[in-house]
Structure formats: structure tokens, C-alpha cells
Length: 339
Image (cartoon, rainbow, N blue to C red):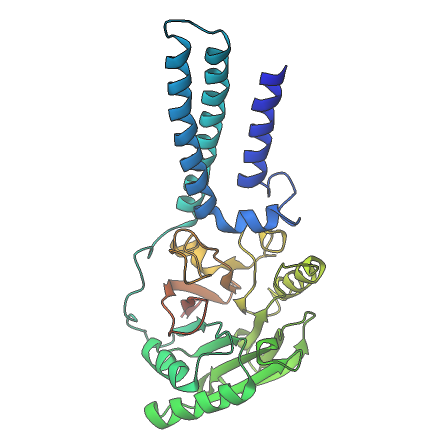
């Protein structure tokens, strides 16, 4: 019985860590955080599995020594079984990441060509530390038309737009909403004026600055997102703010920003007819946060979601950011359907 309990416990723990979304647990404390870090959890499970496998070999050999023991072979069998469970969990994590797409694990390349009619969407959480100089250079280098900047003050965004205009001649409209007094509670949206004028039409719930901006064309209804992070006592706020942002899919043709959720979390399990741009091009398994972890080990929590009736995905990339922020940027090049 103790052996069965040990094996069952190991199996349950690995299942909760690897597939909490299948068990309805991905929105709960613990599983919600672990499932965001599939690459890291997979690596840890692989290390545990290999270590336990080695221990099982040692125990088996010790049990067959000059004075054979009945205990050591049984312990070796238990340890070996747990090792297999851990390795299966690691393999499952790897397979799920591969299915999501790990294109660009080695880093981001230069911006590609942009065809006439294509729109470049860029999401860059600035952590309220990136300067207007850094942001203007990034926007110009990536040829971005729509830029969502979580944790960015309106002042920084206005200065960024002015620098872009002086250096490239492009005119970017600036909209912003701050849910609090600090810069990290503000989200800014910059939109190339050739796409038409927009106005802020709806503020979404949350302690960060998510909002909807509406233009004259149905293709130019954009939700700029920064959902509440799932930390401390904020899980209820996280659930509410992520669901509210995703619920604008269909009304908004583009929903983009720091969603603070992966495709395994409840709010993104059902996109209501929208699609995740990175999932369609094989980059959805590449981490956007934090930058101090390898791209295979962090969490892909920054997204560009789109209405496939309006836009088609040309390509996506996870872009190395300017120095100072903890988020990589997400770039999605979109083309109009039928264009």
C-alpha cells in the first residue's frame, strides 16, 4: 500500500504540474503559475527523472550485494517508477511546447519586408523604464503601425511619437489610459494615422490600463491590454481582467498586449472566434517574460489576438527588447482578408 500511495502521489503531482488545464485547475493558485512556465517545469522534471533513475540503479545494485536485502529492490522499483512518471511529464511538456511552436528560440532577427496593405502590430511592455528614445528606435526598426505599450505613461508615448515623426516622417496617434497614479498602471496605444483616427471608447476592468479604441473602419477597433498579474491576492482581478480583454474579440478586430496569461489559462482557452497570431505561425511556445530566463523556459504571456474574418497572419516574431524591461516584444504582421 505505501508503494502504491507513493506512485499515485507522484502521478497526481506531475499531472497537476503538466496538464492543470485538462483538470480545470489552471486558474487556481499554484497550477496557474506553474503551467505558465512549461519549459522550465519540463527541464526540472527531466532532471528529477534522470536523478531518480540513477538512484534506482544504485539501490538495485546495493540490494544485490553480498548480503541481499528485500527492502532495497522494492525501493529501487518505486524510485524507478517515479522516475518514469517524471520523465513522461517532461516529455509531455516538451511535446506541448513543440505543438505551440518554438520558432525563434535562438533569438529574433531583423524586421522582414512589409507588403503594401500589411499592418505591423508590436507589443512591448516597457516596465515604465524604457525611454522614448529606445521606443522610437524600436518602432522605426520594426516598421510598426500599431504599437501597444503596457506600463507606459501618456507622456512617454507622446514623446515617442514625436521622435518617430521627426526621424521617419510618420505620424502616430497616441491614446492612453492609466488605471492608477503610477506609470506601470498606464497603457499607451500608438497608431499610424494612415490607418485612420481612433478614439478611446471603453475602459476595461483591472488595476492596469486596458481599453478599447475605435476607428471608422471595423478593422480598426483595437483592444490595448494589460491584465492584472496573478500575484498575491489578485487572482480574482486577474481572472476578471483577462476575461474582459478576451471578451472584446469579435468586436475588436485586434486584441494585443500583456495579457499575463498563456494559452493554457482559462481566459485564453476559448478565444470566442479570435485566433492567437503566434499560434498560427509556430512561435506561441517562445517565452516573452522574463527576459532573464532563456526563451525556452519563461512564459509566453504577451499576445496579439485577431479576428480571422478581418485579418490574416503573415508572420510573427518574439523580439529582443531594448535594455531595461523584463518583457520581450511580440510582433505580428497582419494582412487584410481578401487583400
